[in-house]
Image 1: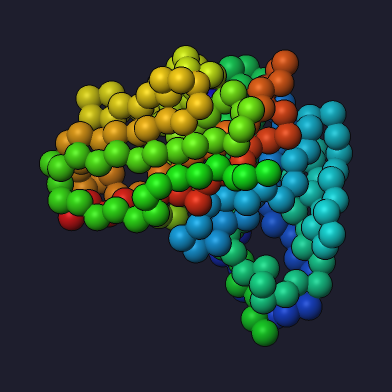
Image 2: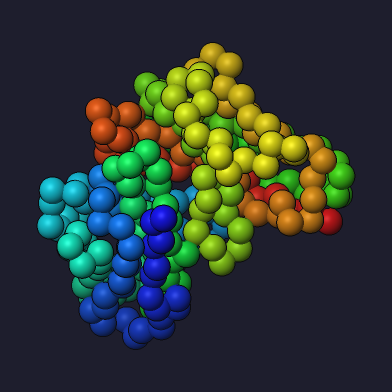
Length: 112
Length: 117
């Protein structure tokens, strides 16, 4: 059974710091992995999607990497800003049955 | 491109009452999902539709939850009767299905926050 874990559960950093959010999964047979951002009281906004054949994706100050063999993905945020404060969730789609499993998220707070 | 539309945004009901949520996916997205997100947790899939057929409803509490997508476009999710533990955000998402799974990932609506008192 696929399990997705995100560590840390919460993170507070000063503005301008580079930071890494971690996502681990137990079953490497995935189709893709997606990182989302969720603001309080809002839905999920897709940030980056990595197909199983890819190693990383970049969008602006965000870079996501994928290492299927070790069951890990990281989301790197460069030069963090207060507007980056939100909860970041990762989700994996399994190849068997194509079910999507979400992690519980990392709540990020960037202090001005 | 219009996003995934959901209504209402908020709903407060008493336990044992019924409630319905509505979702209109992105035009052309054949796959529609309803997720339940309890505070502090990741979203949990309740039901997945492919056009107007159910693909996965294994985690839907069928004694009280029901969902339909009659014309393969918009969808409604109903809870009857509601329990206190149903308090959560109900998210609708849609995707364009690929050969082996969802292409380009998922697009989510803003969700409906349900409070059962």
